[in-house]
Image 1: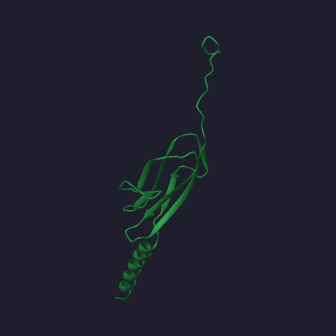
Image 2: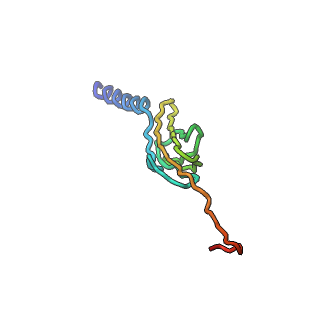
Image 3: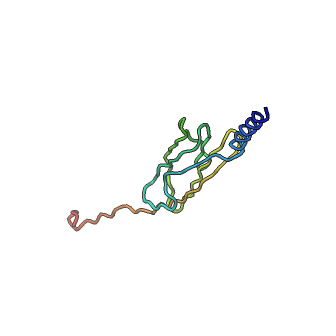
Length: 118
């Protein structure tokens, strides 16, 4: 009987530890420090099942396995991206990424005197 009680306590203890820990959160894209000229990027990653995910404070959908992806527009210059996973218990984990969008200029077209390109 003592063994059964001890095993039950371990099981409850194991569940309590999982309940008290913040969720796992892995960002697979973008790589931290990415430099791009693109106007947007795809944020991708995964977390545990039944965990809410937000990117820069905006809730996004994740599938039943915890995988998520969402496009994110980029401003010219440094963009800090915060991905937050929140368990139903309220425990959270946040991962940050910094992405730099380079300024791009429009192509210049020059015309000669007869309005033809050189």
